[in-house]
Length: 122
Image (cartoon, rainbow, N blue to C red; front, side):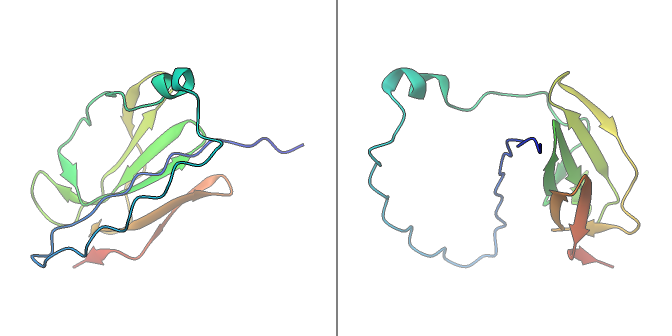
């Protein structure tokens, strides 16, 4: 039997210097919305800070690990950075670097692996 693994989705945006499109109207709350007690348990919590200043990264979830790849590292574009957060221990570690320096890389955790697709490089 296959085990379902919950996946968190992290969305990031870049500033392009253009006016962003108007926000779509908010959807109505479905009848199956969580009760107020359940809603009180939902929300954001702060996790451990990244061990290195990175932005414009790719993020993928694989099991209980969050992988952060590439990006602007310490303010410089294109990085081979690969940081992994173990959500059970709350600790970051460095993993195998990307084969080339990239930023804005697309990433996904799929079939037991982290896949990196595209991005900007030299």
